[in-house]
Length: 481
Ligand code: BG6
Image 1 (cartoon, rainbow, N blue to C red):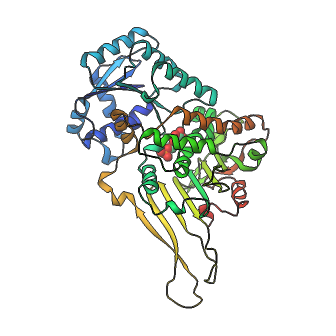
Image 2: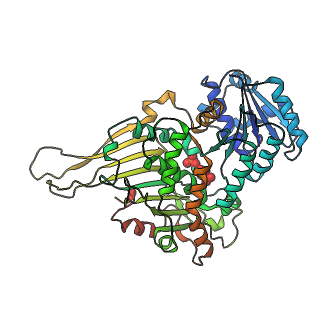
Image 3: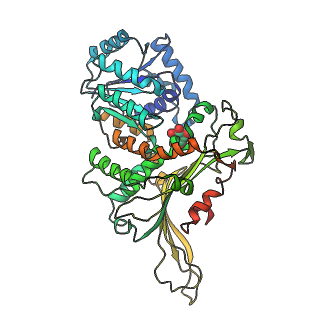
């Protein structure tokens, strides 16, 4: 299958930090379909060779095992091409079309790795230039809007040029192997399905913690905040996969229809429930890994007195027969103690304890980051003595070790799926809009609220109010057990 992959924003951060390393890994693993061309498009004038040298240089920032040797890079670089384009000029799109048509590839993927404010103009111009034929797909990377209206506007422009199945919205969490394993756990195994419901599950916690701060992205982050940056997309996507009904098949729309139903079943927020069930925080100076780090307000490009949240914890419910009343507890934050993304499914305790001492309920921990694995926590008896207190033990499955040599990175997987037209891991516009619809009341309430985010010390697990939030349901966050 000959393909053309066009990267708009070809000299930008996303291209050299994520896309090129992922494409190189796909190339190294022999997964990139033969006969492909990768065309980087950007504003300045350079030759193909200049561009190849530019990207070669950027590889020095990639972890060592993923760096190409000179010989490997020479072969990979032969796929790379460069083209200068002014994105507002129709004739530049005609030129691009000429370049693509001359070769007549079977598949053309147009990846918009640009600032999102350029999406409307690029989609519009692509449509007008006829760069929207059925074998062409457009890939859009978040942020896709900053509220429901702006997301709908982007979707309107995209839809004017491309059919829904030609528009691929990336949520890079869906590319993570751990997330695909969650689908496998739920729908490739019968074991958990009878327990996967309100009768057996006490609560579900989703934690997306990062120890990094906002770095040099202070201005972007300040317009975004943790709710838009992590909850509206990544955390809600995880929630949909956890809570969805088994789809009728592994087809993209069968899966996305079920995910959409979950989003539509989320308990809507009211002013009262926002005040009670949502906690927002902002980090103050503190210490992480023995190193002093500044507070959010002292980060570069953060406006003085900003009330942007760098932490969110919230409680919601999925209002259907399977989940009614089960708390879904979501949290994310910057400058927390570590990079730790995990889902904890807390099962209900035994109905009638016969062992003495405190009993602990079972839990299933689905680890996404830094390792990718599953832990099933059980209680066991060390010996068979009467009155013995049971000991917590766990079954530990480490996917990194199990599948060591076959792991495929998130962007590698998503790029290969985009080229192959496999849509399962891309977000459909109705899912994305429904997620905005659900978070929007929180954004509105915060805009009017005069109190602002609660402070938390960098290196802590967030504001104490987040513990109080879950305590109301008789729960604790995983690290408090
Ligand atoms: C991005 C957010 O979507 O996800 C970043 O914009 C965040 O703020 C990143 O750091 C986290 O991704 P990962 O894959 O490192 O968990």
